[in-house]
Image (cartoon, rainbow, N blue to C red; front, top):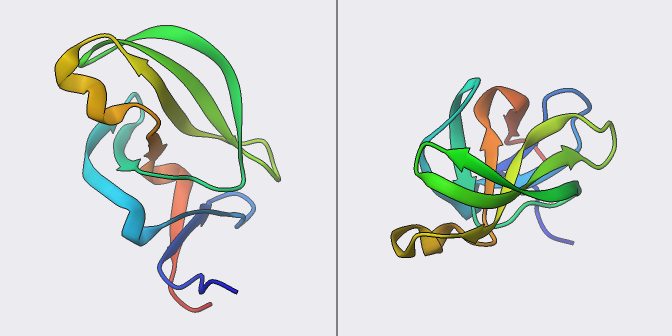
Length: 105
């Protein structure tokens, strides 16, 4: 069984969402404030894909929700339309205030 040390949980129900080692960047912003770019997320459901104008241009994204409680946590980049943004494809933005870090499991 994988250790959950250094993992992030849904702030509402404590469902494990992502691992600290999978943070690509902490320099992202969401409408609510600071956000992290993760290479993977677990225990999330994806909403429908839609094109959305973000600060870095037009992207195809799907909102992501906690699998247990349904809380909106951020979004997944499905497709980017600008070459300089391709590194985001398949990655997850999780809003900092929607996740909490756990270190004792």
